[in-house]
Length: 105
Image (cartoon, rainbow, N blue to C red; front, side, top):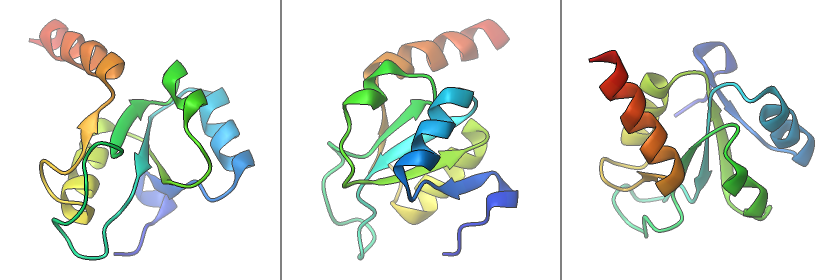
């Protein structure tokens, strides 16, 4: 599946790209392993964060990192690329997104 920057999705290939996304603190960042065969692999390391999440400082250089402009684009892309229920929110970010949904209701 091709990833298009203009669609609100960008693979963060370098440390500089990752640092820039963190400094801008806009959008969401996924890190983890995209399985070759859909539905195979662990969900433990497949996490979605707000770009400003302090937990992102602790991740290494190995996993794939993808930046998303919106949560809707992130959900759609991750469900297609990794599979539903094969990724999850960072536990700290999950609280914030849950609060956002409650505030909008």
